[in-house]
Length: 187
Image (cartoon, rainbow, N blue to C red):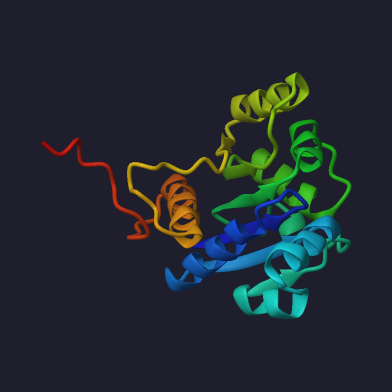
């Protein structure tokens, strides 16, 4: 399997790192594109720079390189995840505004009818945010807000991240053991 992972400037860079690590452990090829704001959030929230991020990727594309492989539908991938997905990126993707490699790769994912998962990070949500999410959902994208469940009784931030990453992997059809699945209430 080959996936494009976009990282933008919404808070939640820890989810991107968790996803990239999990995908690597599952043997999934990871082609990563990071917006400038995504770089800043990775540095601020995780202390991670692009050199370190390259260790989580099979290919780290320059977001300004509009001629990169992931800009073309002829470059076969199994889909794309944008995590975290800023509202700016969400709006650009919802309206086909491909002004960067990241948004172009998302546009290609939609036009080729491949799986697109967006993990929006904003609260509260405005009517514009909701309309853009609905538009993407109607186009076939999965909108997956990083909302943790507490039936698992998480004991750490790592447990919360694993749950959200597990939900992303579920949408990609990838088997994992990152979190306990609900088996019904215990008597």
